[in-house]
Length: 420
Image (cartoon, rainbow, N blue to C red; front, side, top):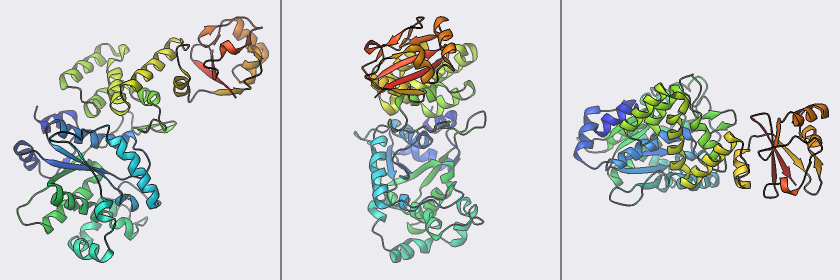
């Protein structure tokens, strides 16, 4: 398949400013194209991934990606999709966020070779610009009526929009113009909410460059779930790319828990698996859904891409241990990942405690009578081993690496004892 044909098969193309023009451009030259992100936090989340993974597809097909981190636009705030004004961040906060996000982007793109990616920061050309230059050189070319017609502005007129956020689209247009002039960048891609900003950039290029010069824009659809709930959100919040915010195990679990109704779509848009492989996995979803081959492939591909092979193997090890109940092989670091959201209880490290007393103190059993019944019935295990002795006292041998004891009641109810 040609690149555009494959993107359409994967369901990645939402809008194009000139479909025939883009097709001809991609067929006839190595194209430089860009996608950007504003550093509103010190990590991206999986909602940011699709445009950048799409940009990587262009790189895999021989084109040159330009990856923009908005050190300047991040100080202003994009009104796209927002019902009210963003809280402004300090320059120090934005610069810290830029540094963190750059590290994450370096995992997605190849920066070496003939079509190695370029990483740029719009603070380098917009950060020191004075207001008179901004108004004369750029503001003069973008009409107020043109900006009021943009959905991102029109949707905020009733609730209010500051002049600061009103001018955001011009700043992003300046990015496109700068990259067009200095890096021969002829195309911008972004999420569907970026259509207005992309077309403003094209308008600025049209007005400021000689007649006949052309640039293009392509947007990607908003990712949705079949049940109507928001993609990338869980009960504990967003799924971050930073392993300190969302551990590789949690990241892996998010993908492996994808519903059958969504998994083929996610394989198409997020992974680099071939169409033939995805079609095989699609057949597996229909014919043997209990094996969850598609979900496993999705979780493996995404965790390997963002966190690497070692973190993937660790996530798979934790998953297998929790599924089988054989938790003795886990390290303290793996226990911290796998049991992050499990109810926990702190016990003084120098004090011995009877199992029945621990079950009550930790809230695992409702009373001593219930705790004795649970133990006698074989419903309680310590570090994966069943204990049926009601007089059992926990000792040093029950402390995994001297830090944790894992108590399980029933088949799936885990509790973590931490020693302080």
